[in-house]
Length: 147
Image 1 (cartoon, helix red, strand yellow):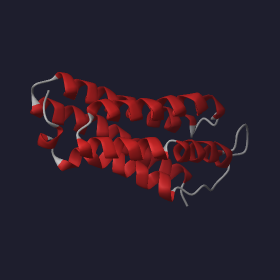
Image 2: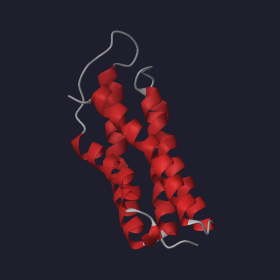
Image 3: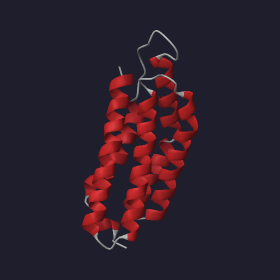
Image 4: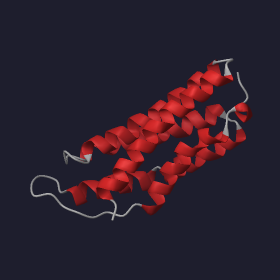
């Protein structure tokens, strides 16, 4: 198993980026029919607030090199988002909730790959690839729901 300390610092950025989006999310705008964008954004923002501790725990585990704890925290975050996903019926915001959940799952899966691989470069690439999806989802949320 590669030492997490051999992974570059940028591997930690996706989790930090999501934590920042959670901390600064503001919700505005409406749509004319069905669930309003505002209501959908509120559900997503509340969901992200609910997983903020899981994300903080994941960051702590990442810094400590504890891949098992990191995986558990990311699984808890993804599961929590998945439980609330059905509450987001707005066609514009629903895919963002799905993208946030699946990108957290991708980061978790990259952690599993990293812990099973003896190739630090492959683990780094997996972190970077999955982290990009998480950052993209966080940016989409901010652009769609932010002020």
